[in-house]
Every structure is written in structure tokens, then in C-alpha cells.
Image (tube, rainbow, N blue to C red):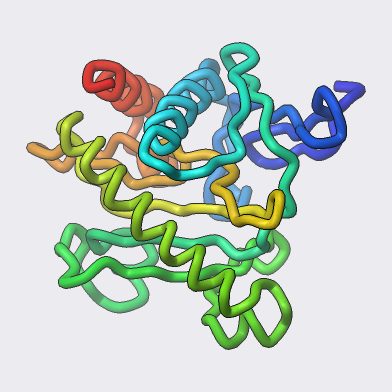
Length: 234
């Protein structure tokens, strides 16, 4: 695309309507293990866009400011131009994935409190974990920004736990990104089965990108199930 500014693993960032916004277009590409595993899954972009847009509308209704301005088509959205904080915020409700591997906690174990983790947003360095003092020491965010990101992360997590519970889904964990816009921190990127672990509330069937990571098959069936359930409760 001639107006593309940047192409990531799952999205393209394109020139917006003016200097204050950008267009994000979702791709059909699925990746895992920092891009080492890759495949094209026809229709994935539409599914992620639809799920994320629905979730962002829900969060906006509950007072969370996001970058979403307008849905343009099935795979493209117009968003506020923001300076992305190069720190990913990971929220964990149930032990899974790297948390289970690192700390020897069986996958599926309910955590006694919600866990907040930070990772450096860097494909080159494989998104290493980073703590608050390291973040402030190298100037990625101020202490005040970290407090605000954490506050918003807890609030977003609680709102989404309620939404997914109504849809018969357990929110295991999720990854959030924030950006600086107009002197505030706002929610950016996407919230979809690519960035969350979502399990069926009755069977613990995985409905997220772990189906691709772990070769469980029927990847898009899981995404379609998430979309259908959210549509039923929205």
C-alpha cells in the first residue's frame, strides 16, 4: 500500500485523514514465538477487527478512553495518533503460558490476586520482562504514567471479566498497550484473541491464539466463537 507507514506482524499502520490520526488495517497473518511461527489464516483480520472494535465500544461506554475514532470497513479503523509507550502491560487472572513455565504454577491455577507485569515492547529483544525502576531508569515512562497505566489496566481487566463472563468465557490474561495523546494516556492497539487468553467457562477449551501456538487446530473457529458470544451479549 502506497500510504503505509509501518507494517507489523498482524497490522499495517497507514496515513490517516489528517495529521492527528492514522488508519490501522488488520492482516490475516498469524504469528507466534516472536514471529518464528507464521501462517496466513484467511478471514483472521476481519475477526480480530470485529472483536476488538466491539470491546473498545464497550470500554468507551464505561469511561475508558481509547484510540478508536471510527470503523472504516471490515478490517480498517481510524485511530487517534498517539506516542506509544514502549511498555506492554500484562494482566493475569489465571496462571497460564509463560507465567506457568517461569514460576512452576500449573496452568489453570486461579491466582490469589490479579498480577500486573510489564514487558519491553521490542521484537528485537523478544519483549523481555522489565520492572518499574528499570522502566523509569531508561526513560520509557514516568512513575506517574506507570501508576496510571496500572490503574487503567486493573479497571479494563475488571470490565472485561464481566463482559466475557456474560459470554460464557473466562478471561485468563491479556496484554494492553497505551499511548500518549493530548496530555493523557489512552488505550491503543487491539484487544482480541491475539492479545488475550480466553477459555470456555465450562470446558476450559482455548478460544485464542494458543490454538495456533500449540497446534490445536481450528484456530479461526475459536475466534468465531468469541465473536458470536460477544455479539449475543452486546
